[in-house]
Length: 299
Image (tube, rainbow, N blue to C red):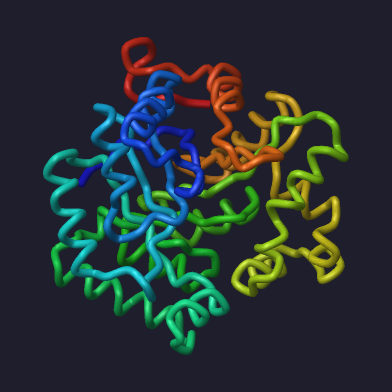
């Protein structure tokens, strides 16, 4: 599989998407018309029902899963659905897989969460066995060992909740050939108090998960930064907020640090799809559909 990855993608929860077929089609077509090339779906499952709907709705929109949890997603089901979608839409589906978080995995599966690196290796071996190639998958990698595994056994890495400093470190570990697509939260709000309030609401669940807090400590943040919803320093580092120039600057920092694509997650003060913000961002970054500016858009 060869995927042409644009510099800007959109990251959003699968729970945000409408359920109706027509609504999903119209939403996917709207994104393509605005000039977005790729959507990352958080909370997608191995049946790939939502990715399939998006792929079938447009001729060029690419889809990534962010992430498929190795503890809960069936390899056999994934192989069947991936095979059908790759045949129908070659080179447009990228499988992001990862080990998830101990608290969530144990509550859902009742199994003890341990040795996540070894568990990911076993899952990748199972994917090999059912014919899903390394070029079709990326790892949800944060730490050095998982990033190293991503470089060896997949197309690259899709780190979540990271800074440009992490992107720089990840690129050094991955080397020049691997795909690096970090997620970056943004708030299109210039009032500091309001922007940080929206950011803290989004960060609250992640600051309770050791996978993320350990990674943030590796990046130099302290326990004081992680306490009480996150310091202003932490919020500002993890969430790009302000006007379009401020947002553009953060995205450029990721690209300068080695990102092939930045998966932008737009935060608002509600759970609806941020349609107005999609349009503002697309115009501010001068995205264009292929008929206007070619197949790959840039910052």
